Length: 436
Image (cartoon, rainbow, N blue to C red; front, side):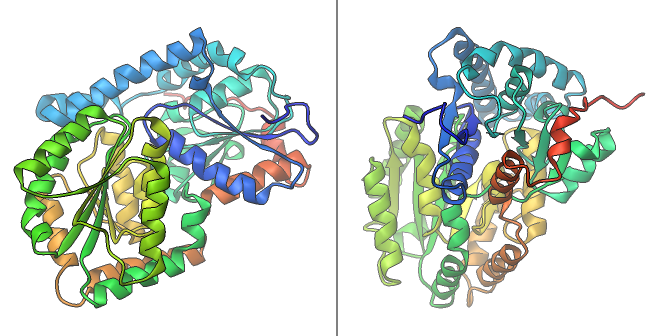
């Protein structure tokens, strides 16, 4: 285990396992920290839920309620979805005050970490708890692309992924000293291999190779009905070899059972992978040669625990032609995307960001909408996929996907006194709601 008394103090990537998104962003940040930090500075991955305590139980109970709401809204739609959309989008200044007060109860989980350690938080509760505990170098990585009070943290630097989020926070009254544009939260391996992976996708499209679709399930385990209907719609194309689908059911037993039932009903044989080593071997095989293909048109990833459920999507994204997922943290990924039905109205803005960056579609509310894009991507000479991949390559040259890299650099610069932005922490200006 890392030594908290080492010099220099470790860089701590703090997160909370609420859904897959916060963990995914934390893993991405760790990938950059372990590469960019000096050899004598350790990187510590700190999930507050891993500490058995009453404080962790408090977070876990909140997550259960959020996951239940997400599943209920996505399965029943209509009034339930509308209500959930309002609840996840319409929080005013009190949406910041309540989390700040809640986060103060989490301070004991941060005990033992040197107060000068750089803290990069991928959940606002972690940043709020760190600030309340007296840490002097705290950075909050803001999720999504919709400016809301509750995703911010007072008295620390809040980094955002897109310019619209940046100027929206300024309009809300957030002091410029406490917010900055960083870029998308993406793992190092995906960013480093953008040119190679995009060129491989373009070559596959031009040569009429099967369209390889990655369809992952989110951490809340929602969207069972949508994904199962999508599988049924794809069945003729899966049987004639036009498309392949990589289903990541994660560690959700109800999703695994639903997918297996749907595949049986559609008479679709599948290959099952249930270990992280198996996932890595699968990716390695498909990157070795353009002639290598999955054993069957359907590959089901299903796991007994949490880590491979999250990591698989990142690993397999490199060998996928298109990512089909709700517009969560994955909407910012440097992979061609069909952004499907959101779970919470706040996610709609992430789909807009994706489409404007040119690396994904607008939100496809219905399976029919998604299938229209599948038809476009499998027709003619691959013009649409070629354009999207060329946009990803261009975006990469201007640093759009360098968010985690920039966050780590800022944190390390501050810890060595190289950044003029240190004043943003030292002044500790309160974020206040604009006067009405």
